View 1 (cartoon, each protein chain N blue to C red):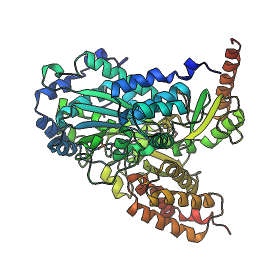
View 2: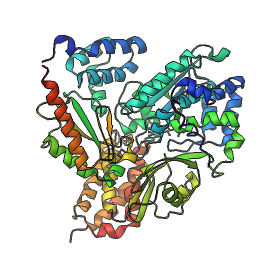
View 3: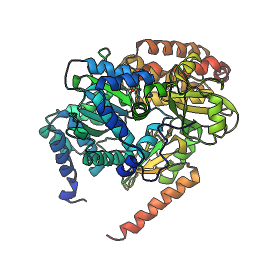
View 4: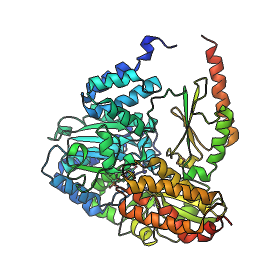
Length: 409
Length: 168
Ligand SMILES: Cc1cc2nc3c(=O)[nH]c(=O)nc-3n(C[C@H](O)[C@H](O)[C@H](O)COP(=O)(O)O)c2cc1C
Ligand code: SF4
Ligand code: FES
């Protein structure tokens, strides 16, 4: 299968604007500026592209909602915080093809009616930050950013903003708080970003991978895109394969390939014997069926979620209790602490799982964990707390005997 | 001891950021990041300076510093080692890596070595899971680690420092 976003990554020096232009770069922007913003949005809607950052919301709709808001100014924000353990795909794009993201950000700004774009990138991506800044500088020199772009009436500024080491800032409303110079604590929603986003203004926020699909959609048409992969959520997806596999890495493949194909044909097979997988990182639930199709709906039907596409493979010599413990440790550390169910819930769960990990679990604590998970899912303010117990709950449901084996006798 | 000039090496950078972003709260995080990078921590003088120039109360500045993992008021080592302990690295042996680091550096539960050379932090996924287990030392990436490799890397750093100190 042809790659779309990674099509040109093997071209040497693709990070340089002349090389990018020679390989067909900025053609989509030229084309988009000759269309009306509404036509650009229609094309994206036709592609049926959905967000690749986790929530799988239709991108065209999100842009339309933002465009329709009366309030000014509007903003386009790119979420490049990439913090879900097991996710390392946006890095590949920004490192190898920063101009693709820059081009997409200008097109997106034009579509929604924003004159300013911000890329919020995690602070540890030192090299990628440098490359993006360089790409933006080059694009400005060539007139792809700035006043009256390519002779059109459209002006656009683009800025890179560094995060400082907080996973929750990847959650969109926490990200806005962080951009505004505060602690990254999630906001109550609604209102949604399309009405009340960065600086309280209408904002469209999209993941790096989502945005990078847009130039190809403009060049080839939404209709073309919608025929790739699974009909329900078409296109390619970046699968970040990690854990117990022989060839971990980022693979751009059509949605709907099976977990088995991903692991066997691309990942070089399991290191050891397959036990389970977390298809959407530590925020998702375990799956044990390798025939599951990797698209949003199929993975949801299997009781999990595809999320950002962080496919973590676990082999049979690994204790599931230890996996659950490792997952919860992440959430304890990253909870922003503003709501009780998440702050206290993750700590209690960590204590309990710690006891199981040390062989001192109590039978009644198994039900307590399940109940805790339910309460957190129902009452936590943001996705972090809502998803924190997914791995644990699925671990208990699928591998209860392993928990029983760690009960103090 | 660093000279007065060096101690405030962050100032020109901070002024540059404020010029670019304006005297607004939005400039706070980029300023703090710049100070952290230049000074290895956020010293009291920087907090006072930011409070006065961008008019954000000190409590809010402290609130921001304590929220973000990459910011701290405590002086960090010359080399900040961030070792990942999230699941993909855990599955590939991060425990062993962390033990090797603690042992090689003689951390004994401390965060920073007494000579101020190394700070060791356990952090969440660094986006290097295809090279698990992984760590970064300042901005340098180290992946596909094992205990032996870790000892080699730390040994090299220590050696570099010995040679470097000789020029004083
Ligand atoms: C705790 C948490 C962390 C998140 N981290 C990220 C992230 O690092 N990158 C990202 O694109 N989306 C992340 N999201 C999803 C965003 O809130 C948002 O849905 C996404 O950026 C929208 O872009 P999309 O429609 O292109 O997917 C996170 C969500 C939650 C709840
Ligand atoms: S669920 Fe957790 S991370 Fe989200 S707002 Fe509440 S405390 Fe913060
Ligand atoms: S889990 Fe260690 S780098 Fe991602």
